[in-house]
Length: 327
Image 1 (cartoon, rainbow, N blue to C red):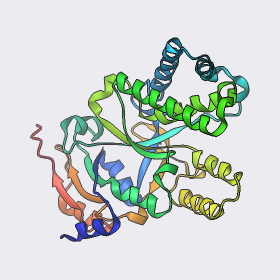
Image 2 (cartoon, rainbow, N blue to C red; image 1 turned 90 degrees about the vertical axis):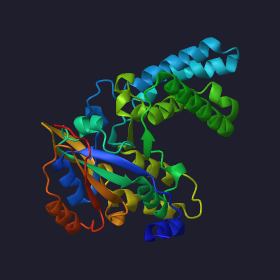
Image 3 (cartoon, rainbow, N blue to C red; image 1 turned 120 degrees about the vertical axis):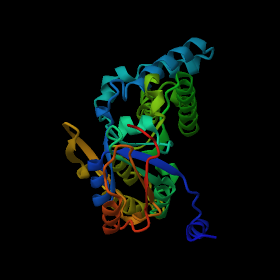
Image 4 (cartoon, helix red, strand yellow; image 1 turned 135 degrees about the vertical axis):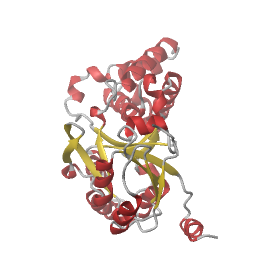
């Protein structure tokens, strides 16, 4: 058994590798800051980014209303449909900004080198996402509590998008019904919360089918959502250990650079964009980043890169060169 296998067995980790293609400049920033830069999803190359989910959601609600033969269920669906028009509730709802960093499953892919790897002149990082998940668990942030920060595959297929919306709708309605009973069918606030809960879960991961060849997945989070969760938890009953959890959570988001006060600005390509730097110093080593692949047109010298990686704590990270024979 290798050291890595022993480590995985002791910690209960199953390695899952994902790949991040980027330019040499972006790579330098990631390595020297020991962080992943999560940029605003509103500034991507997709003009429909963050808009697809609401279109699908509205169509799904319309279809459910047409099919419904239960008066009470029809009523809640109509209330949910009218949620975006409810000015009284909407004025108290802050607009959600989503930030993310993209990955793919493909190793040494020409499509991704050309699109994300600075036209094949950049590099690709092989990252073990299981180590990031372990970091969350180790800091007492369970999966059930981590809806504001997660790794998801992007969904491009319309049928799959509809299926997810319907499942989310049913799940949210049933969950609220278990809490408030029949009141859910007449209360605008509950309908409003269901609409935007579904929208929040799907907005960052629904994209137009025209981008399906990207086969993208992304880590993303909702700006200011951790603080909102802390405020909500602070108003609940004083359950044993809750105050300690809230304080640990507050420390965690500040330390990891995900608090609203941590927003940064930088030059990306030819424009200034906002971003959050997800601090990975706690888990920064060659188990997290096991390989660096140089692009087909990358001119970076391996010996120089090896010294650079060592000086930044990646002593065991392997360096490979793309095998794509591009001219």
